Length: 453
Image (spheres, helix red, strand yellow):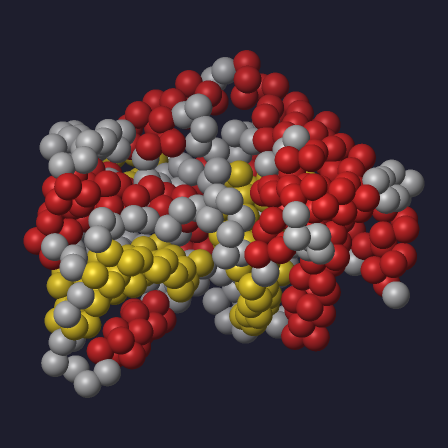
């Protein structure tokens, strides 16, 4: 069992500052709950599963953290103290309930709606709803100040890895690194030449965008009326994305971002915001927590280019900002003259989630994200597996910033735009590639004019 030092204390990190400001503004009226559940069907070994989850919780420093305000006379950041409590998986037996699935869903929704106090020692909940023979819902709820979506995925995958080890004697795998390892790495980065170079890059990159919208200080996120529309894409679109990405020598998630950016540029947007995992090449790749960064991306479209030329240039631009993506948004805001109470208005916000569903041996598993936190303005989230299969789009907005009519327009027109550019008509691979290459060789001006017809 991994032995992290007990009761280590650290200041909150840059990624957590946004949620701390949110807490100071709204108090217990939390708007940044994050919650997932896995529906499990099959012969689950409950004892082994409980051991696996509890072992993973023991490895996960962030789930043991308690947040504390600095004393009034202390000029320092709020603190988070690790190892203050040890969460456990709680079994909830609903086998005698007449409608156990519906009851579990109701309990999860009630829990999500409960206000969260981020100073509460037990900010996370881990439940196993037993619905009947070979039917379970595994529910994990926390607050975004502790963990991001990738961190939740790491936690779930590690639980399943340990379960497989206990049941099938597969390799146990590497335990999570300690949170202090990440803090040490971040301290080294902030004092490095790379940090200085990243800072200068963002100053130069944003010098041509002096009027980046800021969040209205009177904007009430806690009282926002959040709207959501959802759609699923056909296998033809997934095939088209993969094939087009192969033709262009890029990954399909980056290709999808560039196509969404092209659509939004046509709709009048000049900048969008992208989550950056901020983990590869870092110990953070194996630490659950809130490490994600948010990056501004300027949409640059030359309508005389072909679609393929535009995508290649846009992907190059994406990779450039990713190379400097470790420099925190909070520092970018400060460099742009924002004070500690101000924030950029992060809209439109585009989130691509190409993650595998966790695997439990001998079981069928379905994964659902039922709480993602607040939506600033207009958000587009695409979820799928790493091969772009079972692609699901969610369109979120708050009614004040983006009225329902505008959300409905985008939720209809963006999928139609993407289908037009990626949906293959030919049944054989050679025909598919030829069809897509024809689209890639078409000028953007022509494509956009045809799209308006």
